[in-house]
Length: 252
Image 1 (cartoon, one colour):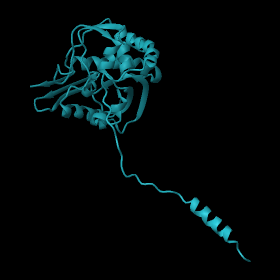
Image 2 (cartoon, rainbow, N blue to C red):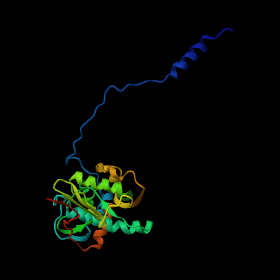
Image 3 (cartoon, one colour):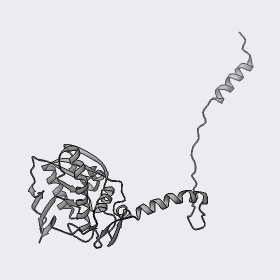
Image 4 (spheres, helix red, strand yellow):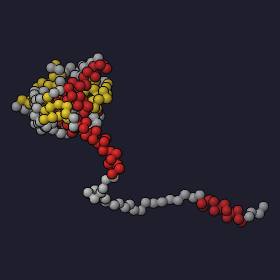
């Protein structure tokens, strides 16, 4: 059978036309666009956003409480007034939620010194204050820990030599950083007992090198942000007067 040359040409043309092209990236170019006052805002966008911005600003500046004086996380060596306030506020706000769900009480709270991002200034406290102290979206979780893990928590605090906020824990060390006393709810730590420790999801996941949370018996996520707990505490407390106390001290 004689094949028409036209069909051969047409067949070859189809094959080559279906062949995929391959491209290689040879160069990337960028351009710096400085943000200066020469960049004008879009008036329509500004007009649309304005009422929402004003609403948010009003909410943030709404007075919730009053601070007796200015508090900073650098005010103490092993515990600070602002850190004690935060840990105690988390306990007070979270414990009723945890107890309503489990029938049990939170035994202690631990947060991290680095998580305190601002001072509390003397004077009016607003929602903005809470956002400045805790700008992160960290939520409160409660971890069921055996006593031996709680000893690991104590060792972490001693080795850290820092004022990590704690509540319901009393820790006393000597000049050589040996533990003299470690009490949870004014009782010695029982290695066979399960303790319910409140912290935040970041620390539970190993943030701040807090590896003592694992292994654990169980985890309870309260779906309650620390920032919101602070705001709720401010709302019900007319004046805050936290102090540096004896919850973590060194005997020299």
